[in-house]
Length: 90
Image (cartoon, rainbow, N blue to C red):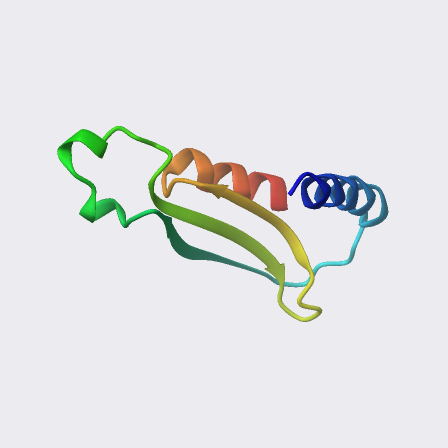
């Protein structure tokens, strides 16, 4: 797992340097819902404040014509996460 994390970090740095000033005509924003352990609605009262289990959202911004992923964010489905995704994609 450590090797996968290291490879991902190196790829992120490389793409941050290489993918600049990319011409963008249209941006599509979407979200993907997943969950860790169990869905948010199935958590017990004891698990209600446990952020290590429950819904997990992936927000993604894609250039519509080239299908290039411009940005993605992992986090809860709230205004702060959404605002951060949109702001970083523009």
